[in-house]
Length: 266
Image 1: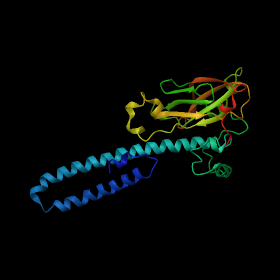
Image 2: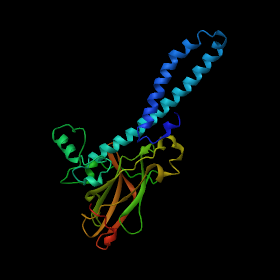
Image 3: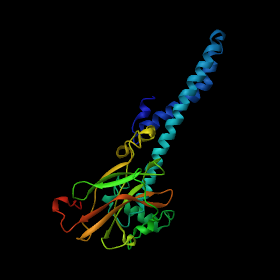
Image 4: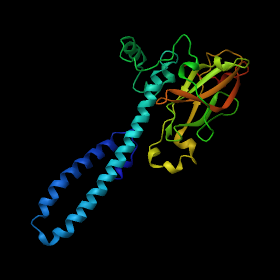
């Protein structure tokens, strides 16, 4: 059972085995004393041993349950972050939100009915980064983005809260080379999905940033102006309700971008 608890938290198996062991521990607390009550010679030895074993099993359950809750919290936060962009990005750019089909129309209807008033949506008529409350840049210890070769493929990593968890989203903006920071317009987003062992390997996160909070993404640049643009990335922290710039500005000359570098719209 303990080995099965190490499976990917995205599957149903960890929660199933966790609940099974919880019921077993609770039942054993009441049943085992009754079973050994008629054995006075072994009672003095067996009861403390059983109590210790049950305590260890319960600690394992609680610890793994905490890790599952942290993982699910991160996953839910990224779903909420994706919902904020349903008016400015295509459904294909929000794979975690539309993992079981296109639900953007449903979310728009719920928003219009007032059921999503607690979510701050990025306005479709002005997808400016300032609508997300920009704060100070992140240190390269926690976030960085680089371009692969000379195309529109990027990769990097992004933590929030001092490395406690991956960013809820990495938001990409464009602006013309001569424009100031107020002209940063949102055009794409990626979600750093934590691996299954994320909350069991806290001491390795600083050394293996790309594994525990990494992302790789082909930027959707077809709709951008065909000129030289400055592409920037920003880590979103949904709890703090802000985004923080990531080091690694990319100059992308779309006027010279070859057809093979441009992603298909479909």
